[in-house]
Length: 324
Image (cartoon, rainbow, N blue to C red):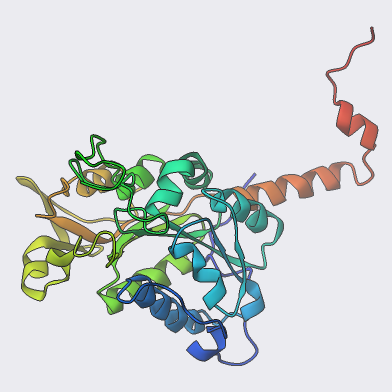
């Protein structure tokens, strides 16, 4: 079975007329805490969606539970505010059954990496045609400030009054370990970079995973201040660009986002030891491989061609039956 590589949007109908940010903005009052980084990401998403040239009815946002998961309310597209951690599973079913849709998953570090951890890694392993946006503020915001799977060691929170004992996940390393075909990291405070990464992720066919560092001003304010400060960011951020050199320890090589082996991309992701002394941002990996939903549809079509009128009883029973 051969599936030819194509753009992530190739099967999605194009809009008859150009759209604007206003077309993708709902009439709902946006309700996040003042200063929340979600406002910035929402504005960036509303700004870049028209550039995709898609009809609003062919764009879907699926979210789980958390502050970021209010996203579907604020976009004038189809959407679903689903259940805790299960957004990738629901989105997998939608992407598989509806190739005419561009499907986005919006999730947070708690929603995706705690109760939803297995759903996330299997969506990436399967390479379902989804764009997954993981908002990482290193805290549980909606439930009022408990530590999350990305909170640093020793983090004092309501659920860890003596400091967290858990070693945090590195979401980019996790995605590369699951061999996601597109992996990137960006920041809510860098609008131009954020939009650039979002556009590349949406155009990729397969699972696009984008980690977005996002500030929670109430329960974890200033978590990324050293990366938001202009002078500090220049010294700390390693901006990854395809075809340009990247320094890892005492070694240097040319960054190749299309390398089929994720080992070097994984090694780059480990530069960040949690201290934010050196933080790589940009696209770590972008490779083409068959997508789960394309393969499923091809398999179904093959079954229909070989047996256009299958016997339902035989399908249910299969070949493994016996008489008692």
